[in-house]
Length: 139
Image (cartoon, rainbow, N blue to C red; front, side, top):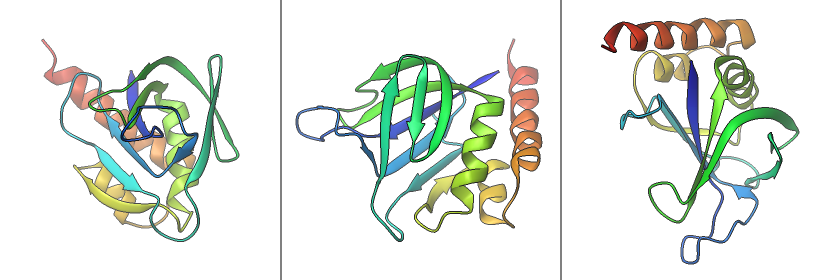
């Protein structure tokens, strides 16, 4: 299962790509509820984001995305589809960084973010549980 990662990287008035990420939201594709929303309003500047073909660079992280859409919801947001492995790596890296501040979310992802700092394998277990629960709910 893939997850949607929405990135606040565009000018709010023009929709032009700025390359700086000051917020992100994780969702199950097709679900309006946020699993996790973070802002980079903590310490430091917004993270530099760039797209190169199927690769997404967030700060020093390199992630492979499956799709990329622009102006999702409003002009500020782009969205990429990430595998559970890519998202687990991203969340493990961001959770240990003081710039990323919790805004809102839902169980169990929000609880995981607010708890002890987790590594890749721990995030992978949480995200797999979400994917498994989502699959059970689908017809």
